Amino acid sequence: MRLHNLIKSGGRKDRKRVGRGEGGGRGKTSGRGHKGQKSRSGFGLRPGFESGHVPLYRKLPKRGFSNFQFRTEYSVVNVGDLDRVEGTDVDRNALIKAGLVRTSSVLIKILGEGEVSKALNVTADKFSSSAKEKIEKAGGTVVLNKPVETEETKADAE
Image (cartoon, rainbow, N blue to C red):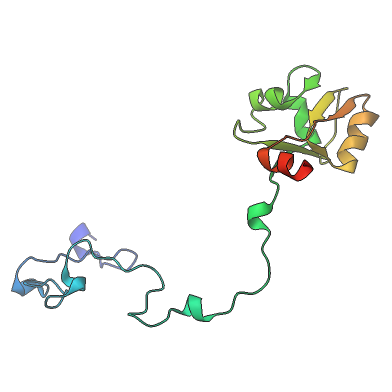
């Protein structure tokens, strides 16, 4: 068997070589037809466009409520991962240094998966009940951060 005897079997499709003469089957207008918006370069239809008809996404009724834009997002750290932090004081900066939390994360929540091997003083925005229990059982302390004050929370308070 030689390379030239191998039969080409699926998996990879040759790209269309347009504008290479009439013999290639895609010469002259290169499969774009004659004139019009679709024949020009830079043309692109937005998703859902139905040529002047009212698009489907506008015909369908809106239903329900989504809390997506109002949700509170936490960076989650498990109790078992806290052993990677150097020292006994675990706060936001220590978690970032240990690579458990990204610098961009605003709020941190500690969850109870895993075991704590040493007494730690953990400061975070939220704790699960099992995480709290495990940290205190190991002889550590749990400190809740004060809620972050934003313009919205100030307006709500007034």
